[in-house]
Image (cartoon, rainbow, N blue to C red; front, side, top):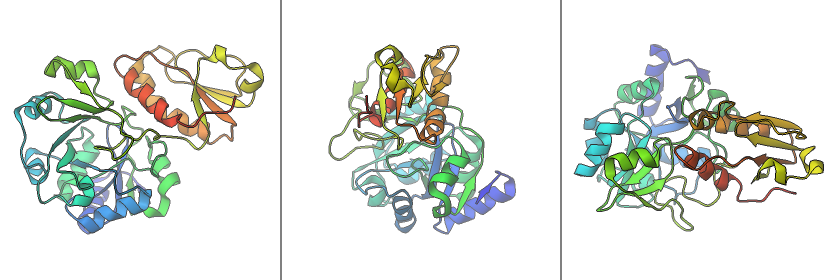
Amino acid sequence: MVVPPTPENLERAAQIIRQGGLVAFPTETVYGLGANALDASAVAKIFEAKQRPSFDPLIVHVSDRAMLAEVAREVPAMAEKLMERFWPGPLTLVLPRSERVPGLVTSGLPTVAVRMPAHPVALELIRRAGVPVAAPSANPFGYLSPTRAEHVERMLGERVDLILDGGRTALGVESTIVLIAERPVLLRYGAVTVEELESILGSVELQVRSLDKPLVPGQLPQHYAPHTPICIAPPETIPLEVRKKAGYLAFQHVPKGFKVVKVLSPTGSLVEAAAHLFEALHQLDRLGLEAIYAEPVPEEGLGRAIMDRLRRASSTAAPS
């Protein structure tokens, strides 16, 4: 059931979380599928609803520092600096795990991924629930992330007890994930850019792919994928006869000859392009196209996160 985030519905959603149910809710990045992070049975429902493999850990969402202390055994000075700059916001920190966090949440790892979302609905839901909320993106495992409540309803339907409709998410790509260690390690590109991190940390080591057991969500080679085959290619490289049956995800300008074109940002803004990325892919994926082609974007700022999502989505080559 999709409902607006009124005080009454927020209290209802919080009660569902406390009682071990599932609630989909908006964050500033994408919609999350939430359960009580301290309840292993509730967390298991997330894996079942998403058909998510148990080796892929979850992100835990908190509403304040007291709640952070429930899930993280310690908060190093480096994490404090990042929290001061980016929390609440789209930055996930990987910290030493508290014993209260079930192993299912962390896939047995000694660390836990935590963030404090900036969306008022997400923060109020967590505050009312009174427990940390484990919440991956509210979509079937490996598929496109949802940026609207209708995406969640179409993909997960009755597997979710309640969906809070907060409109389209503002940022449109998932949070950046940083492992707090002796040297900070960037584990996933996201809405906080490398440049922003480097302004605080000086330098960041990159480890954004895992071929085996991921340390955090979004590290598998194929992820965020539509059902329609997708391939990254400049429009001029695609034959005209192929264009007639294909869709194109353009960065700024509309190329000729494609059956349908979605433009991410007419002004060339990477921020706007990131916000529209998943929504445009959802739209293209529902049109019965033979293939989707995507234009590369500049790999700077949020462009790194956009290209990361496109590369993982296009692990299976589109027909040519």
